[in-house]
Amino acid sequence: MPRASDFVRFLVTSTALIMLSPLLHGTATAAAKGDSGGTALLSAPPPGGKGKDRNTNRNRKRQSQHERQNGTQTQHALRDLTQVLAPLQKAVTGTGALPYNWQAVDGKAVTAGDLNAVRSVGDAPAGEEIAGPGERAPGDGRGDGRGDAPGDPRTDPADPADPPVVGAQPVPTPVPMRTTSPADFTLHWDDRNGPYTYDDLNERLRTDLRFSPPGYRYSTVSEVLAGSLPGGPFANRRCPAPVQDSGALVTPQGDRVRDVVDWFCLAPDDATGPWTPQGISGTWDSTAQGTAYDDTARAFVFSWHGPANDESRVTFLNEVPIGPFNHYQHVLLVNPFQAESGAVSFGPMRIHAGGVVWYHQYLLVADDNRQHPENNGILVFDLRDLFDLSLSAVSDIGTTGGPIGLRGGTYYTNGYRYILPLRGIWRPGITGVRCRSNSSPPCFGYLGLDRSTTPPSVLTGEWCDPREPTPTCRPAAGQAAPTGRVARYAMAPDAGVCDRGCLAYGADGSARATEAFTQPTPWTQGSVSWNGLYQFTVSNNRTATLGRRYEAVPGGQPTPHFAGRGVQDLYWHRSADPAQPPILWSLTEGEGVKNRILYGVDPWVR
Image 1 (cartoon, helix red, strand yellow):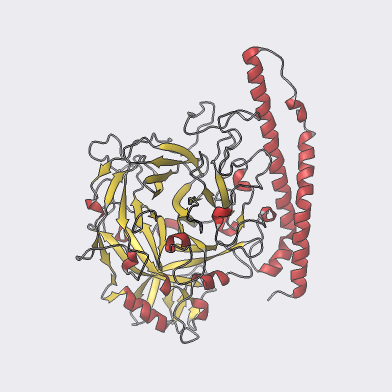
Image 2 (cartoon, helix red, strand yellow):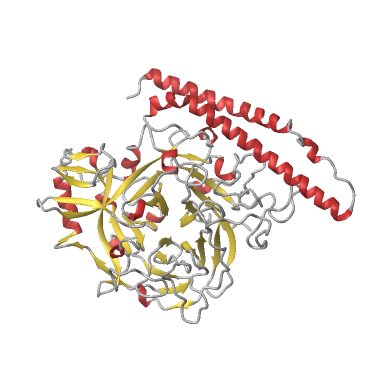
């Protein structure tokens, strides 16, 4: 436990960092203004028709560049100062150094559990404003007096002068959604691993792990989030880097994601490294009132895959801040089985974890794993099997870099304190072979819940890359180019209990899609719908260009909007006020504090 003197030192240094932030900003600003060109860039250009307009635009662009440089200089200065103070901070928290921009967190923001209360972004750096609901971002194509209007995917073609992006697929031209057969999306429940059901294996695992106290059954999400205190990890709310040049939400050319209302950066150790985030959901999916099914927690959950899809995990992020921080906790997904010794062991879940939905007490995880096709489908995990191995007398949660599971009478988790074992898989009719978009078996690339339907329904769809040497996506009948499909399944009602992940199924035990459509574009990463309006995300490249979000209705021409760089899955974050429309959240997979974020937009602003 940290000493009191260490805590006092941490408070003093933290306060000093906050107080120095505006001074550093002023120093950086003064230095930039002293540069040749400074405020003189605002002087009137020589008269003369089109030449005058060109000079005005050129000068405004140069002024914008200086503003961006100011923000960068401030950012670097704060980073360097934090590196000096980090040893003191680490003595208290016992975790990695604070992100260099942690002082930018909005301490006033958001009552617990109501992120929709955020109506504007107040800490955007100079020259990089973000529009709140009911507003338009500066440079939105209407002319704001500050410079050339940034690109808008609805109106502006790509600028031929922009440098080409190496490795990025071209921005697709969206096509209308078309009705297609849902027959391929019939799913069959499989809850067995060898001769045993997962229910039996998980119950035996409870016994073999020798938990203390003896009556321990599982940990709630609230308990899991409390387990990350006091040190972390924690998310940095509204950190400035993603909304500055080349962050996840803007480009140096001035393109930006519009109508952003909130966002989180992850701790540096999770913003880089071999793990890649994919799906996103939360407690507003779990229940109508926005809390966890058997708990008071309000939280996000997002899924990750490890290298070569050989491991997977989920992360719970607390919506309720502890001071200026929102803590989160990783949970390792595992596959239980009976070992040769007769005891129950577990191995890593070798899945891509492309999408996640939290409904009732279940996590549904989509997988279209090309390395391990036996897992293609919708995997079901029951949060009443979420185990805290720090309470196990036969577990080692400190050793990393080794195998996962039972070895020599000890259970190893590669450093993870919490595990969540599999309960079963909803599989397509054809199993064990590589999935193909627009063919059978379908690919399960993402998941998104729609609570505007009665009962709620879940969408799943296909990642389709037509450039692959052996195409896994094929054109649908009558379609010129392949785009993949999206299908909808009914869920069990909110009232009462449910099983098998709460997918509605018939007397024969099969879950059948109620409808299916072709998607507007290939390279679709996620989709949700609300009152008949579909939202799709398309990622061009995780490091260089902004993604796209398309609004679409079946048969209509989709409307494009910018999305985060490396954008992935989607989640409707509703409000305690039923009259308040939901906020659309997503996450990005690029590496770095500025590139790997969770962010929410108000898609209803026009």
